Image (cartoon, rainbow, N blue to C red; front, side):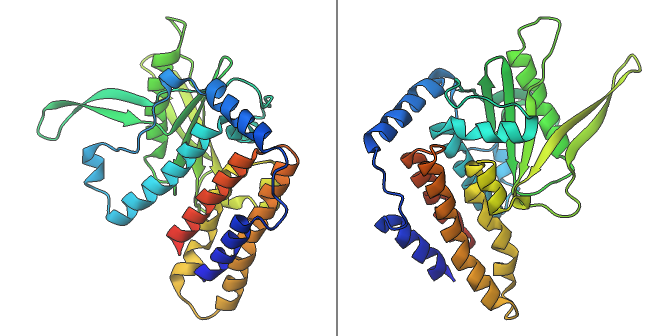
Length: 296
């Protein structure tokens, strides 16, 4: 079945399919300018490290998956931060011009916790992505699937973000946050939420919208220009691939043949219509093939 993806990769590398750029210099200049203007270099800090106590609890397979998907998303945003604008529009109904200045902010925070032996230890927590556009902060967390602790992680991240970036001494402004679930089930909520009870008796509902990546068809991905999600779409085939059932194998092979070809066509059209640069298009395809190779 991996041959199906290789054929699509060969088409991509050979230049067939009509994506050759007539304005390569223009694309390169646009990407260079985006790298220089779109990134706040002194505040950009990406790391694939996890706290040691968390790493010890992860199986090798979970570690591999965590780093792969995390690496892909962060690399896409680091190189092409404007790819996040359709995500923002989809989740918060706020539309920005592509040339808007986007700052990638540090997401590492040092906190103090009591160890099981009673010792107070310092360690770092790291959110996935934090952007500043104008006066707004946008926080994205990318997860394979939902779990009960996710809302409390989001609350912890958002509290630290608010404490670091709020400008008013007597007011905390939380970021606009969203959880991207790369896989979901019928039990995955539309919002991660919990109720906060304060000492004065007041209560507040804290909730974060959830984006279920696999609910988006290729048609919707193209319509909404959610190209940043394309490398994560092969996850929808994971269960069928791992099942190894003979029944439906022919249909699976057909789907695996058509899927990358359709993705190439979507990215080609995105480039032709000016929504993607050539470099962005090629890098998204590279991450797509990396994801396919991981699943197969």
